[in-house]
Image 1 (cartoon, rainbow, N blue to C red):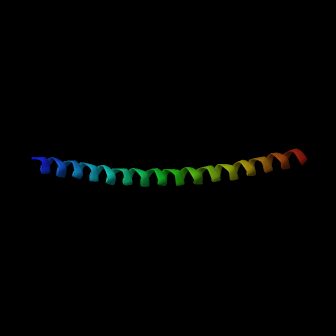
Image 2 (image 1 turned 120 degrees about the vertical axis):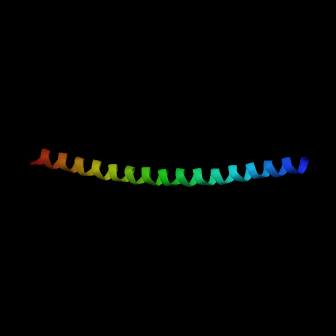
Image 3 (image 1 turned 180 degrees about the vertical axis):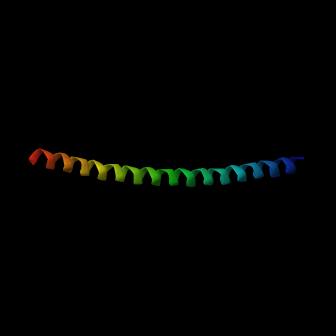
Length: 58
């Protein structure tokens, strides 16, 4: 019985490790998306500021 419990526990721990890896990969993908969005927003803000400046000087 003791060996069976150890085997079940190891199986559960292995599955938890695999789940953690999948979750971490997903978080990394979401972080990459947010970084791209942030970069795009910064670019858009610069363009908006340039348009405002151009309108003021015209």
